[in-house]
Length: 242
Image 1 (cartoon, rainbow, N blue to C red):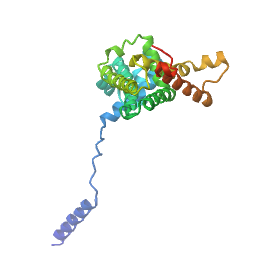
Image 2: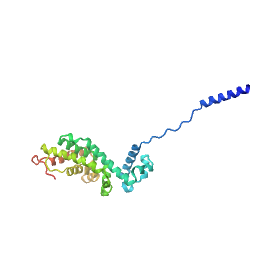
Image 3: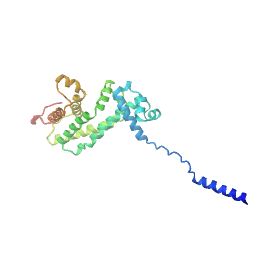
Image 4: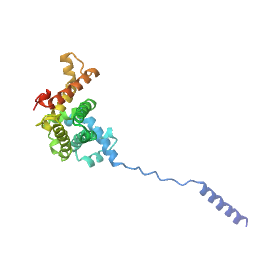
């Protein structure tokens, strides 16, 4: 009996010990966020392409900066050229998206044109990477941008919105007739781009700090005056710029 009691106590004690021992937990599964990973890769790639250009960029550095592995980079973009094109499309998508938020179709023609000039002027000033990428791609003669299937769909609404502003302005008698929307947008871009892209050389040549806030505000006012002046009907003293 004593031996049976001892055995029973041993089993009970062992059972108590088993109950007190916590079970091992499986490590929580890491939740993947494909969209976030893709965006991180694009952001890292934009930095790399701006600093090194297409030829000097290295996908290894991009993957490291993005905190992603090479397999995921190639899975999303195929190769370095595919990633470069995706970066180009991304910066264009950003400016087109911001332009749509201006809601030009619901603005007075003069106010809408003024807002478009101001937005374009500010966008180039705030986004030097955009200018760097455009400059690099122009050196390549738009070799990769020509492959984009997204660009026509991104660009046509902007041209239509400018055409609508011009049409309404003409009917209201505040804009002259015969202005080409694309010619006009290229002029707006030129007035917003050149002083930023060539800031250092122009500042040196003219001994004027083109990064000075007061100079930039004067430049913004000049850009508005040039664009709106070129659109004014001839009888109102507008310059007949074609």
